[in-house]
Length: 82
Image (tube, rainbow, N blue to C red; front, top):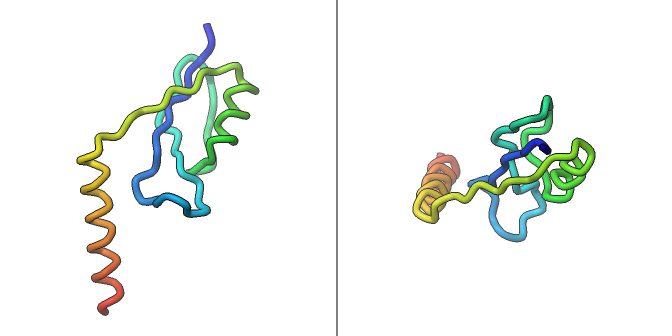
């Protein structure tokens, strides 16, 4: 039985930004350490292929995602007004 790599989309990255959009949340059935905090989809696919693991995408609720973006925007406004 192949292992599994659970990942989700980062909350503070917008569409079209040239930043890695995914984060590894957990692994099951494989002994693996992840050193990079954020990854691109192609990187995750290559790792999964190399260790014979299945990628499992964890969905984020739209309400949670919207709330996080609002908090990030508020924090950005606070920093810029200082």
